Length: 88
Image 1 (cartoon, rainbow, N blue to C red):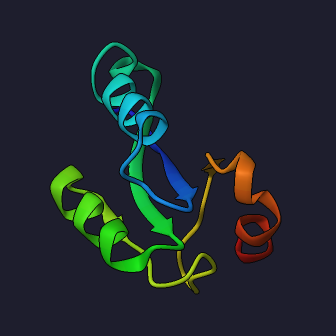
Image 2 (image 1 turned 180 degrees about the vertical axis):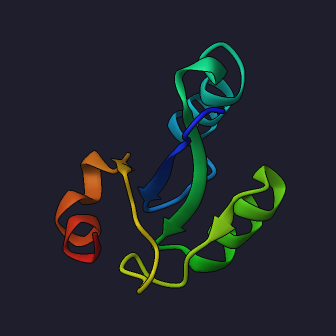
């Protein structure tokens, strides 16, 4: 049985090339590597919730959530790195 490593996506907006590409890769060509996109968080809350629902990913209200172990965090926000990383 595969022990999944949960991946969290952080970005200003999750509806973008990087989040969609990595999500699709982890669910497609890289599915056997043991990673799954489990959570998402974005600075643009409502759009992030919509992306998460469409992508079948749990949307986190905040980046630090008690009881959720984040094994891998991907931050796709080079233009807003300080504000995003301050929430990571």
